[in-house]
Amino acid sequence: MKLGRLNHIGVATPSIPESVAYYREVMGATSITEPFDLPEQGVKVCFVDTPGENGTNGTQIELIEPLGPDSTLTGFLAKNPAGGQHHLCYEVPDIAEARAWFEGLGKRILGPTRIGAHGTPIFFLHPKDMMGQLTEIMESPRGGH
Amino acid sequence: MKLGRLNHIGVATPSIPESVAYYREVMGATSITEPFDLPEQGVKVCFVDTPGENGTNGTQIELIEPLGPDSTLTGFLAKNPAGGQHHLCYEVPDIAEARAWFEGLGKRILGPTRIGAHGTPIFFLHPKDMMGQLTEIMESPRGGH
Image (cartoon, rainbow over all chains, first blue to last red; front, top):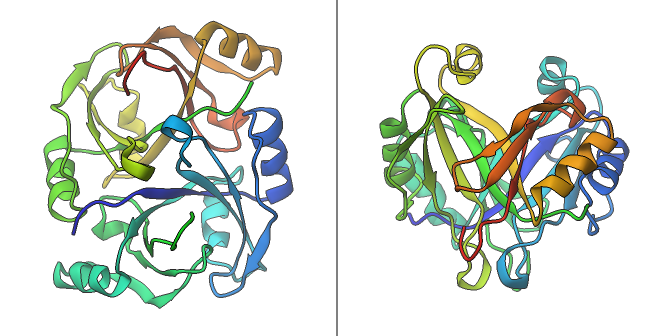
């Protein structure tokens, strides 16, 4: 496998509206998507765009808020009430090939491949097998980020 | 202030050689800098390059390992022995202007402005004032990353 683009950094938050205000008013973000629910992951999501080099799209910040009390994020926020960095997401050209690659290395994959926040297939890898980093692998969107 | 480029994600590790092997062999990184000491921050550092859009440079992964037992990283690694995401670093065009901006907002700045791993001035902001994210602000390097 070849290292792909760092699509986004997942940042957990107790409140997307509060985080959106923070990114706009403190950090000066100008492009933030509307929040939407991702019931399969148990989260509400929105993206903060950051600028890349030479006018390209940079790595996004994915704000994630628990969708109900059974969210996988509930435990994270209990430990980090203000929120914080939650996962890293790298793009790959072919999700099935990437899944086979990590399986071949004996890495624990958390659940089946499913559709992620960008509408392309994704899976997560166990942080204990990834040097402490909860890692999402996503298939690159066609013609956009 | 306007949101700048996400220059790097700081990832703490108990061992840079182990992390470098992980990024090469598991994640498929091909461009990793030589490690060097940054005694002012009490860390050893190296950068993993990730690809950006259209052949540009993407956000880097900054691997940071404690430089001696008094490093600020020692506490982080005691809580996260395998390592993990430590901070986010955004670029600004003018470090003094950015410092005045955050001071004006009443955000706690951790120590004086100093020279960071890319050879330009940097400072850190307290995670409790930044929605749980330890945030580094760095002046953009001239003609490179």
